[in-house]
Image 1: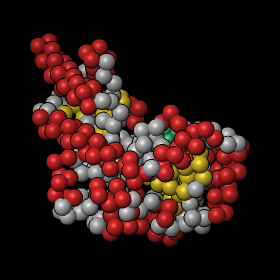
Image 2: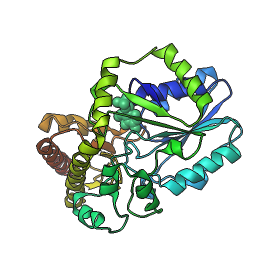
Image 3: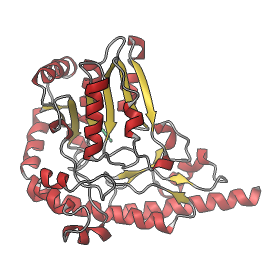
Amino acid sequence: VLVTCGAVCALFIIHAALLGPGDHLLVETPNYATNLETPKAMADAGVRMTQWRLHAAAGYRLDVPAFCAEITKETKLVSVTSPHNPTGAILREPELRAIIAAVKERGHPDCRLLVDETYREMVVPAAAESASVDAGGPGAGTLAEAARGDVGAAATSAALGALPTLTPWAATLDPCVISVSSMSKTWGLPGLRIGWITTLDAGLQYTLLAAKEQIAISGSVIDEEIAAHVLSRRAELLPAVLADIAVRKQTVLDWLAANADVIECTPPEGGVVCFPHIRSPLVDAASFNDRLFADSSTIVGAGHWFEVSDRHFRLGFGWPTHEQLAAGLESIARVLRTMAAEAARTA
Ligand SMILES: Cc1ncc(COP(=O)(O)O)c(C=O)c1O
């Protein structure tokens, strides 16, 4: 495990250290910006990039065989994010294993699979489902197993299509895999700037350490000490975190159901973000974000951040208080209805 200045620095280190002239990268789109912008900035250095688009119509699920067919002997890095930002889609363990097999069979001999699993532990059923899950229902044990840190047990109950459960840390699946995570999401400590890169490959770890030295020398030892203290209390702290996420997820699912006339959205499987779509063609998407902010100081992630139209937006439900979340959701629905009604009057 190589400690870095947040997951964002981990991603920068990996792209900078592993990609060079003539190399090819295959990466999902939309995505967390660094997974796209860092390699894009390397185009002048001769890095070629294939952005594989995920589609709302497919629930933002990765078409694994088609994705893997894009891997060639020039491919040095394959990059996925799970749970996914901005959609909350999760790659199941069999899907990860299929990608690993393709990386080894089809890629450059040094090809690696980067799994940005910054949201990994935030995989819980919504509050309404968790009672049956804790009692051994479908996808049994997600909350309880995650809280115990019992990764193996959680993983074996994962089957493609079933209620999502924790997958193993991706780096434990094969030495060609690189996992990235941080203190920012599950632990709610983005200001600590502590993340990490995990790999079973000691030679690769050495290369990444050398890159870290060029970029940052070391992280803040004070941040590292605080992070170590929090992680040492993992078993004590995690159940409350997961229970809180389950309630937030339920709030969002209820809101989506109640506002299906103005919003459509693939329900998030994991993480604390989802990617709704504005239904009414009458709503002027370009002014939606400003209207929303004027209405209630609510901020969502604009679609163009993710290289799609502003008719999409990222909804983050992990950070605000429960009251702020409820008020923000109410505001989104109100503003969309008002804008649609105004547009209908002037049409
Ligand atoms: C998928 C993903 N990866 C990486 C990061 C960067 O996280 P950090 O705050 O640890 O740098 C984020 C932050 O939003 C993220 O969503």
